[in-house]
Amino acid sequence: MPLQWVRSLIFNAQMYAAMLVLGIVYLPAALLTRDGALRACHTYCRWVIWTASWMINLRVEVRGTPPTEPVLIAAKHQSFLDIIVIFHAVPAGRFIMKRLLMFAPIIGQYGLRIGCIPVNRGKRGAAIAEMQKRVAQGQARPGQLIIYPQGTRVAPGAMRPYKVGTAVLYEQLGQECAPVATNIGVFWPKRGILRKPGTAVVKFLPPIPAGLPKDRFLERLEREVETTSNALMREAGFDQGAQSAMRKN
Image (cartoon, rainbow, N blue to C red):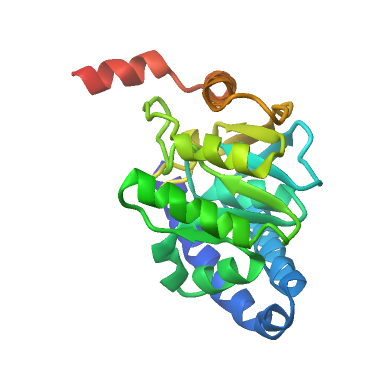
């Protein structure tokens, strides 16, 4: 384990160094067109996935069929790596992201160039209204709009409610929704340096058709994503019962 920690430290350092280098190299293309920014981001994602496979022995497997048409993607969020894998799996992804990330070096500038939608975290009603307005303004941009229904990273075994904002967007867009489950948090935790070896899975589930009532949609989304994510985590050797017992103690 000490050796894996050192390998993880080196991997993390080069991952952020690569973000800076590629961000500078691709800057002219990114400033010219959105496609240039997308190419930069996809190149970075390929780099992280490739270096993870041999530097820390963490491989990535994408299951199911990633959408290529304009669609709402609602995904389980456990770590930075699931952002990378989901984005890399689709041709023109853009995220609902925290407004603070706009001011982060490289990430903020490229996020805006690919069409990410920054939203203030605050009162729920104001945040939803802001999100609806910004999504409406950006609807002309083709691609896949990616949202995390729980609003933040959630560690394996932890529970957090699915927020109504995802259902509001689903109704506003009038598009089908592609649910996404994952077990990445078993290998790449929310905090800390250590990255565990193994095979991390991101699974695109069958799409939920457009037109369902918001409450039925949200209930179905949560059931399908949580059930599949729990199964993937068990497949990766995660003992949810043991984790629950530890939290109670």
